[in-house]
Image 1 (cartoon, rainbow, N blue to C red):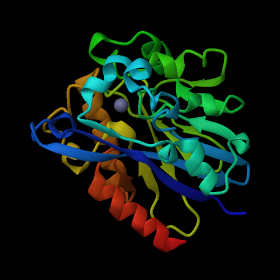
Image 2 (image 1 turned 135 degrees about the vertical axis):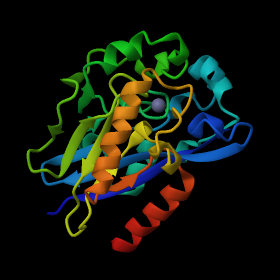
Image 3 (image 1 turned 90 degrees about the horizontal axis):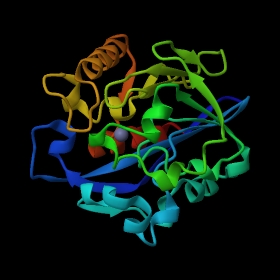
Length: 262
Ligand SMILES: [Zn+2]
């Protein structure tokens, strides 16, 4: 069996575009919430888990003040990861590994749907998620995280690359700045000549790549963010295909191409 990738978007958020590019302030922008599953001969791997379906009925109660950061949350239960996996023929109990880019609301929401999986996170992300900097406290949702303390974590040391199965197919790379323990994911798909870099929030869209402006207020460390951007640019120079974190045009183009490849 060859490895297969399943890209999903957990609905979408509408936000002020300036949050993403630090330029287009006042322009409402609908962006995707990417999450991915991989069927590998050695297990089923997720990269990010999207928005939590458990809070949809009463968002303010579950997500707290974080809801004020969005113009609109366009997420239904059908969009959330358990239902998307079911439609792709994947039972949540099959998931062996969950790689989290970081633990923000739209990336770690569904952790509790996979209580038996091993979670691969950067060691520096966990303490920050539990007691983050004041400008990020609303980006981490206590209700999403409170039942996950006893989970099986593989806490990856900062800066080192981590090859999940030792075959080069799935590699975690540390890309801090947005958060201390942010990581991106390198994917080598069979029959796909270009390696794919799933950037996560290290790079929301093409306009971040120039690195002229820090991407937004949701940044913990501007110099480290800038160095992460340089790493992604280097990967692109080496022929890697960058999949951006929250860019609707890029998401539509890349997922359409991926569908056509099947
Ligand atoms: Zn984030």
